[in-house]
Length: 301
Picture (tube, rainbow, N blue to C red):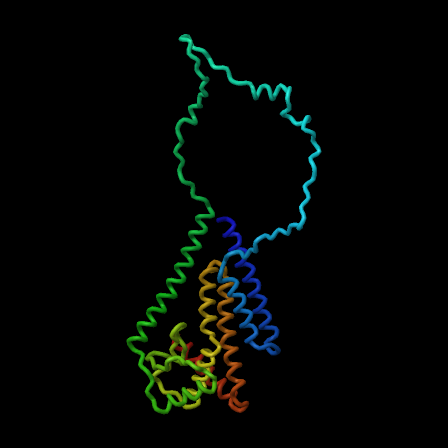
């Protein structure tokens, strides 16, 4: 148990330091290296932090094909148990029976100590490492329960209030964007009340949610392209993996800071991918659309 806690702490501290290096590299080299390379670094780091177990390889002993045994340097006559030695005679001498008054021979009995006659009752001892392990497991369970409860509530809300999009102009545009991105399978397109901006929800059965408030044609086009790019890059899987890492290493504040950096870099990487597909004259309009969506989200929160 102590070894596991030590490895967990060392892994969490090392992962947090690597995360700080990646965040610093993003601030210093933002103009030279794209955010997608940092996302690959975050993915590799999260994969290592997701399993807090030591990775050890079995010890492979290489033996020579020919084994030669060295001869013994002792002669048989010099061994401690040789003939004629008093120690051997004492060992080999039989124990003489004790004759009783009736003439019958009885063997000597070995008396046991009174302390060893009955086993003593021992109470279970709770070690400090076991207490720490229990606290860690409670923290992991609490964070996972909180997030799963939020996902279950969102799923119930969408099941009750979300409805499929039936706009005859929007559906062909959505399918055309999916074909342009090379998507064989696409998330379901639905509208949901209460949304401030389009969003992609769900890991195994993703749904692209649109707000009920009508958007301008260009804003709707940019929003669909942004969310479909998220789906194509599988960013939601990276976010789910980051959530699991945050639950396992909940005691480390550097991991919480790393989770925010992953969220920011995934958005920046998605924007970079979208801008590579758009003509240069539309970059400013796309940036204004993203900023307006962020402002609407901040106003709702």
